[in-house]
Length: 315
Figure 1 (cartoon, one colour):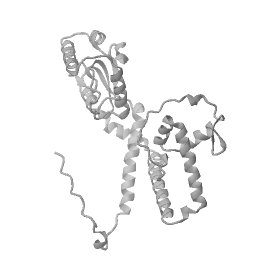
Figure 2 (spheres, helix red, strand yellow):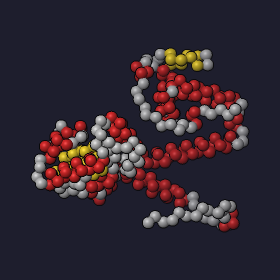
Figure 3 (cartoon, one colour):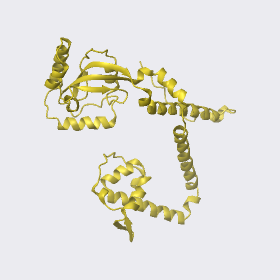
Figure 4 (cartoon, one colour):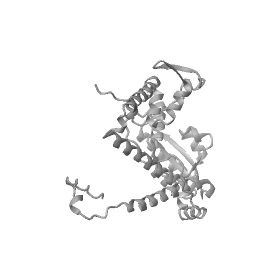
């Protein structure tokens, strides 16, 4: 019978929720395992360095997850006592795993410890000012009852997709997509003929977050819209009204009020992160080049198996 320890592989990615145990004293004995008391603090510390998927698994099934932690420790102790780690091939496999972890840690260290010079941050900001546009807009959201089987929207994060799914499940609106599009088209026509955007927001908008403020919203680099929608909004000129912009569960009608560039102090952190990524890529390319083999005997490097055909070019 093959034993499978959960620590090695978890397929489920579960939403973490604050459990009732959060109010339990860290020194409280929460279980007896293998004949000894175990406190909440000990389990919490054990989870600190576990992979994220295992921590999420713990949120769903704490007792089984804790069992796996102590089972892993017990079996590894038995292996240590039997000196299995000193035997081939496990000895070499452990060393390879160690080298891989250290190499990954070095990559993270090189990126996160790099401090871009102030002038480099300023130069990047000046060169990419178009990426830091921000806009004050008025928006009107016309929701529709999206099918639950709709494909994910490109450009949206998994978190935003999940949020939209929850909103759709709670939405009592039975308006179809075609009905929503007709409604949005009517709103666009009314705005173009001089209707007050605030009155149209009050009458038509399904967006609870902005309805009380007359549809006022800010769109910038951090706004959680799909890339295509954000580009369409930021392409508008002051006073211009967008065509209906489709989201997975609604159409947005946007009226541009004012455009500007975010000040450097508001975007410095993402610029620093981007410069760190650029630095890492350059650093790794130079290090990687040092270890490119200068082939002396081509026969040794000839592939033993034919390479798969290259994919056709994207048209």
